[in-house]
Amino acid sequence: MKDAIDQPGQAQSREEFEARLRAIGAERYHDRHPFHERLHGGYCTPDEVRAWVINRWMYQSRIPMKDAAFMSRVEDPDLRRHWRKRIEDHDGTVAEGGGIRRWLALAKAVGLDPDYVASGVGIMPATRFAVDAYVRFVRDMPLLDAVAASLTELFAPKIHAQRIEGLLAHYEFADDSSLSYFRKRLTEAPEDVKFGLDYVLTHADTKEKQDAAAAALIFKTDVLWAQLDALWHGYVEGNIPPGAWQPGEGMAS
Image (cartoon, rainbow, N blue to C red):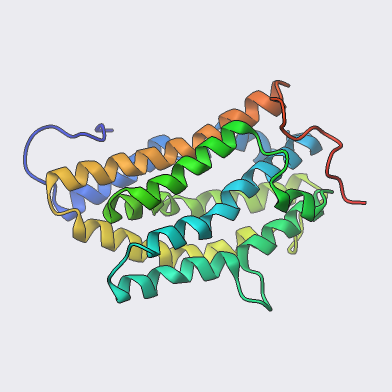
């Protein structure tokens, strides 16, 4: 795969640049991480699953916050109209809680107290640093870079499908209710991907912008990969950092 900074020359065609973005996902997306292989293959212990649910909550809870930060800088009403759907998908409405409440349903299913998970207590430092870095990136970088960073969604449907199949096959907690977050993303994400990819391919109309967009996507894959590295080090290898969740804490009564 070509690096994020391509060789000197003209901008790539729309088709070439899309292929470049997809190649980044093929090489760097976190579906290749050994923690996911362990999780989907049924080899995680119950506490490893709980640690994943707790730490992934940090990322899930910040998605609508980073999208709100993005929208606060957008002057184009059409772009805001398209983008606010992402906040609604995760925050939901008063009656239907969206992705965040569906994630807490998963937390309850694996034996955790949803209020404990939602409090953010027990999040690993590396998880917090990685997720906060993503929020700052979306808040501070050019809009094109921020949209490009969201394009990891191009590769998400595959991992959601693998996760549903693997969890159902190997874990007693897995059922339609506990896995509703992943099932819903199979229908929500494609619309977001279509709009975001078209935006990036249209607005990355110079070599410099294409390089920046590719670098933004690599940054986002690094954010996702770093979270799993931390989980592996902490809960598979047994090096839980101070302040992080300890097995037995935050369990449902």
